[in-house]
Structure formats: structure tokens, C-alpha cells
Length: 125
Image (tube, rainbow, N blue to C red; front, top):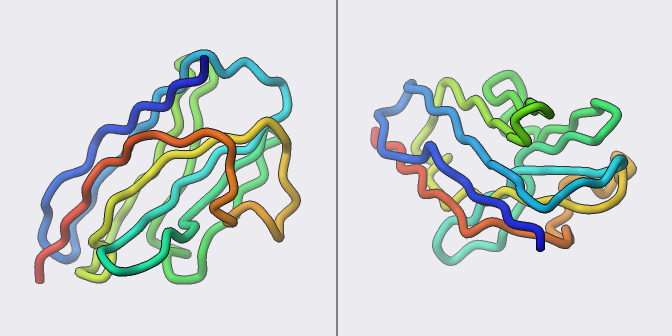
């Protein structure tokens, strides 16, 4: 059974940083995609960043240069380093995983097979 558990959310002031973590268990696929998504109240869930098993990364335009996605395969952990946070980054952040190395045009689509419960990020001005 695949389980994704996020942590690292919290409240910060604009300009601050946070690092989100997602520990994956029961997910032992050689080829995969993992991503971070976010959903603010009243808005649809959207892609933030994604990474594939062969190391390709993809970012939403609104986080390029500020967020970095990475993975530690030895720890089965996915990370999202978030710098220069803005109030509009406030949302619930979700980790997701899929059993395929997605093409670039689908990496940020919220159609992944497995999802975590989310971790709240709040950025105040």
C-alpha cells in the first residue's frame, strides 16, 4: 500500500523560506513521477513542481527561480524548498506520486495516482 506523508508546512512572513518533505512508503517503482501540488480555498488544485525517476524537473511559471524540487532516494523522500515566499503562495500543499515517468506536458496535471493528506503553508504580508 502506497502512503505519502507530508511535513514542513507552517506560517512565515513574506520573503521567508520553508522546506516541505514527503516520505513515501510502499512505492518501489523504478520509473515514476512525483510532484507537489497546491490548493487554496475556493481554487482548484494545481501543479507546483514535479520530478521524474530519470531526474527531469518541471516547474509552474509562478515558482520558477523561487522553489526547488528534489528527492533523496535513499530516504524515499521528496522535498520542496520554497524561498522568497509570497502571500499568494498560501495554500494546502500536497505530495503526489505516479507509476510512470510522465512527459513534460502532463507532469503538473493533478491526475496522479497517489496523494498525501497535505501540509498547510501560510504566508503573511
